[in-house]
Image (cartoon, rainbow, N blue to C red; front, side):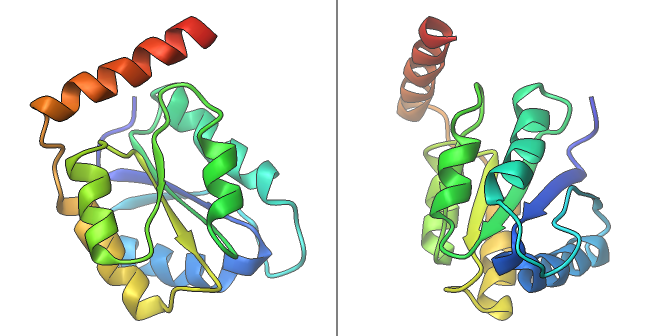
Length: 152
């Protein structure tokens, strides 16, 4: 397993510029970034890149990731198809904080066409430093794990 200082990041064409900004932001924070693409702003299919990242989170190889598409909805749908992935679309800092605090999200999803770089950096910052609260929220996570176990 890679350490918690490693984060995987993926996008489609609509999130390419934001991905590049966030990637630099993370590297400047001393993190190792695994970039699974897209390699440019040329049109691609978001499921391809979302699956590349979500599969590595699901397997436990990498602990956390960031996915970006135009609205964030498509990447959320793709990522949450994988067992042990809890992808959360966050449009503001409070959503990011709560996604970690209450839901122990392990993939942050951003909306490339709805979130400017400055806001995205704030969202990422909050998401990275917020710890899962556990307690009453753990039983809900356990129920999700039980559903996954029954489905997969």
